[in-house]
Image (cartoon, rainbow, N blue to C red; front, side, top):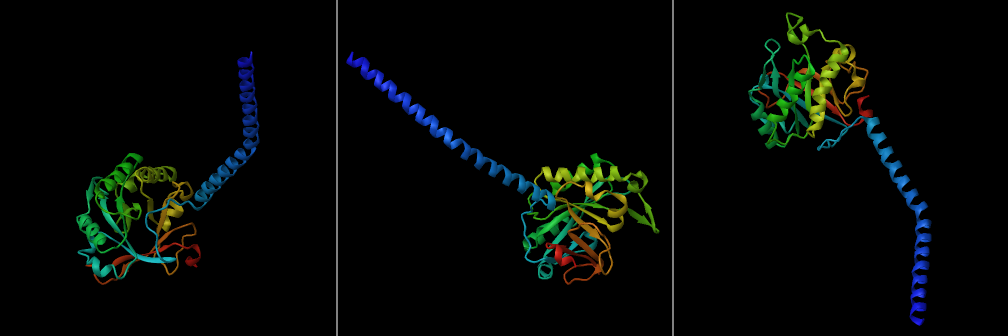
Length: 275
């Protein structure tokens, strides 16, 4: 009997212990739910902020609200990057082109030299491809071409889709002009490039003139986080939409650049500094 009584008491103690634990757990549930709700709210808010500013973080942060740079290709001849590094904060290097006639992609003959020596001189750089894509498949092909040829280099800045028409005797010529795409198709093509770049872990950018941004594409439909680079050779930029980089001249001069002229750019890291 004593043994049975002892067992009952032990059973009773276990039972009361369980009830106490259940009460404690019940009392903690509202607190846990409240904390979880706050965490979820903060995550949603952070996502909303990121979406609002349309930014994908890049590995490089500039020191300054407006920084100066150049964009170069084989047309700029041999570049002394050591000299250039003392005059610029960044650079964009052409890595490839698609022919506006035959549509074939080829490597810029000075791409490897420029990437190697810009990196050695400590100049943060991005890369671009002169596009003549006429559909989404070709735009993806161009993105993959860049991704292939930048392997082994420290590309800290965006991979750029250079969207511009070829001109001859003042008239638009070539496969892109002849394709006569509409705004929706052009924008979808650009986004195909940008998405491929994002999926590879890089930041995409679009280079185009004010004319193209205003009349040829839908900037509001571009992939979130796409860096906007506008070519506008005026005293003040005439494009009224959001932008990050302004190519303000194609006749700049710089010690260390082999050609007579070089494209010059401002990259704005502070919206207020654009005034």
